[in-house]
Image (cartoon, rainbow, N blue to C red; front, top):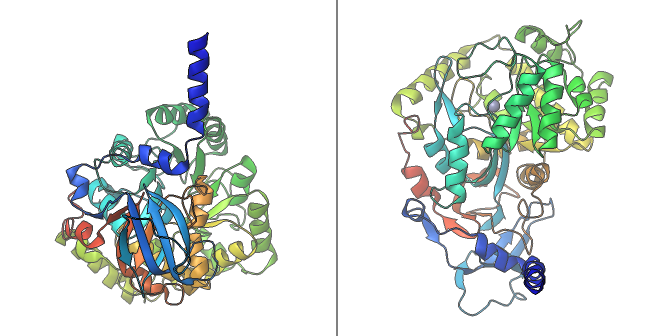
Length: 478
Ligand SMILES: [Zn+2]
C-alpha cells in the first residue's frame, strides 16, 4: 500500500513539472544526419532587438527580446525590460523579424513525376519544408503509405530533419479516379476498416477524396472521430454543404472544389470539371447562394484550406513559381514546358476563376470562418515544398488580406485547427520555440517572407541554405 501511494504521489508530482523541464525531457538527441544542418542548439538562447510578429494578428513590436530555454520561450518583451540569463547564447537580430514557425495543412511528401505517377519525395521535401519556415504540417493526403508515417517517426526521434507532421492516412476514395496508387473503397464498412487500420498504423489524420459517397464519408467520420482524428476532404461527389451536415472538419482547395452550385447535380456523383468551373464562374461572390454556403460552413465550424499555389500554376500570366532549381533537371524541364503552354493559352477558365476564388476565401474569413492554408505540391508540378509555402502567404495578401492576417492564417489558424494552439502557432511565453527569423519585415512587405535566415524548431536553429543545398537539383530522386 505504501509503495502504491508513493508511486501515486510521484505521478502527481510529475504532472506539476514546469513546462520548460518537460520540454527538455521531450527534446530528442539529434543524429548527425540532423546536426549537419543545425546552427545553434544551445539550451539557453536570447534573440535580442528583434521585431516580433507574434502570429495573433497583433501589430509587429520593434526591439524585443525572446529568451529560449530548453526549446521553449520563457520570456518575451521589450529589449530594455527582459533580463537575459547568464550563459545565454546571444543573437543580435537588429533589423530582423521573427514570426512563428509556419503551420501548413495541405502539404505532401510526394510530387507528380510522370503522367499519373506520384513519386515519393519524403527525404527532399521534408528538408525543403523546414528550410521554408514550416515547423508543423499536416499532409493533405498520402500516396506513400507507410513511408510518410515512418518519416514522421524519424523526425520526432531526431533522426531526420523536418517539421512536426500530422500524418494523414492514404486517401479515402470511391470509384472513378483510376489511379493505381489509390485504394478504391468498396462500401461504408470498407471505409471504416481503412480508417481503423491506418490509425492503428500511426496515421493521425484523414483525407476524403473526390468520388467518395456520403455513406462512406459518414462511416469514415464516425470511426475517425471516435479515434480523435480529424477528416478533411477534396470533394466533388459530395457538396460542401452535404459534407458540413455530415460533420466534416475541413474542406480543401478554398471553394475551387465546391460542387454546391452545379445545377441539377446528381447526389454522390462528380459533375464534370467543366460543369463545376462553369457554376463557379457564374457565382456571385457577395450574392445569396455564396453567402448562404459560407454561413453554413462557419456555423458548423468547418475550416477551409486555401491552396492557391497549385491553382496559380494552372493560371496563365502568373509568375514562374519559386524554387524550381531544386528539382532534378528532367522534372524541371517538364514543368517549364507546361508553364510555357499555359502561358500562351487564351481561353483558360482559371483567368477569371483564380481571382474569384481568392475573393471567396477572403469572404469566408471575413464571415468568421477558420481559413487555414497549404500548398498542395501536385497538379502538373511547379509547387515546390517550402518555397510554395512562402508563395501562399504572398497570394493571400494579393487576395486582400493584410500581411499580418496572412501570417495568422499560416501560423495560429493552422495550429488552432490541429488542436495545438497551446504549444505552437504564435509567439508567447510558455510556447514551443518554433520560430522563423527573417531578414526584413514581412508585416509590411510580405515578400520578405522569402528571406529566411534561421528556422528554429523546438529551440534548435536550422540553416535553410544548408538544407536547400542538400537537395539542389535532386528533388525528384529522393
Ligand atoms: Zn493535395
